[in-house]
Amino acid sequence: MTKQWLFGASLLMLLGCQEQGKKTVAGPAEGPKKVAILETSVRLDKYWYDGTAEVSSYSLHQNRYRDVHPGEAVLVFVTEDFLTDKQVKNEQYRSKQSTAILKMNAIRRFTTGIYDYAIMTSVFAPVDQVQFPFPLKITMSSQDWCGQTFMQLNQIGSQYRAQVFSYFETEGDTDQKVPYTWSEDALWTQVRINPDALPIGKFSILPAPFYARLQHRDFSPQRAEAVLEVYQGGDFAGDQLRVYRLFFPELNRTVEIIFQAESPYVIEGWTDTYPSAFDGQARTTLARRKETLKTPYWKENSLQDTTLRNQLGLSQFLY
Image (tube, rainbow, N blue to C red; front, side, top):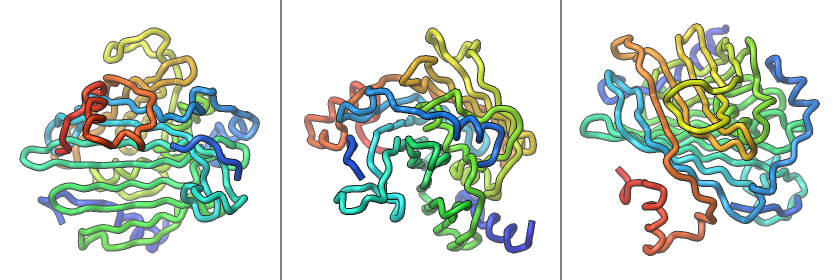
């Protein structure tokens, strides 16, 4: 790596307080599976085109500092039309540079002692994986009582442009290039689009920005190994579950995504095991699905719609 690369990538490490086209319904070429993706034509199930989004709530136990902290998570999946040049939602339909996507918004909220975290990741994954094998855009924002950080990846040719905007002095505002390749965040939408095209074996992958944020790691491709198999563990209940298990040998980190074997491949939960940056002890983040609603949530914004949060088992108020 060049000094410029190391300098730019290291600025992603975020510190804690004690550290310095045609309208559709609104609302993933590196690695061993590249050929499989390019040779696979996928049509999303009609499940995704009924005018609603899928909203799932999860109980969350988050590895952070020297403990595993309580919290909750929400995964929102919805189809949209997306402008490929501006890389924003196609709302006015004045441009033909548009493609259908499956968008994921992943929200994680958890407390750490007196204060709390709110982390949100958005993935914009085209359904046409022949033309667009990986997401066009990924964003991540993180807020805690110390400050906030925002990161955005935009596909430009054979690279992602990775921009970071941070409150913290040691990070500043950075703008770097990383490969347009597999990213950890893309795995989640790939599960929902076509899990059989997930990368397996040994390959290189960009870790999730939120992991780099919590662990103060450089944002750069990492060696990984992955398997896709029948789930046989005891942490998740259900028939015909599958697990995608991703291991980062240099990070000593294992991520598991557990999902239903049949379309639409509902995600039942996940685990994320890695040693803490604060005491070196390995702990496991665990999330289990509580409830799922198919709903046009963007319309349900009145006081009476608060009952839907009760159905999802979510807190009435944000932390």
